[in-house]
Length: 105
Image (cartoon, rainbow, N blue to C red; front, top):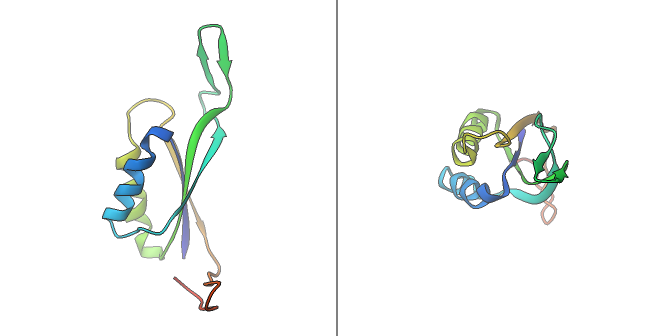
């Protein structure tokens, strides 16, 4: 199993959630986060914003589904401007359903 985490622009949240559902991945976790990437913040007039609003998605999938999920996120989150976001893929050793104790997805 793999965990795909994507940090995206908040205005792309609905599009990414819909893209994941359309690809057959309705289960996900998302939350609002603050951060910055290579651009190190944004200057707007006299104000400098070093922490920008972002949305983080977390999806756990089988190894062979990583490319499908990553591609769906990338296509839905793309704006073509700096700050579109980043995707991270890490391994998951185990997953258990709390109610039943079943393991796996």
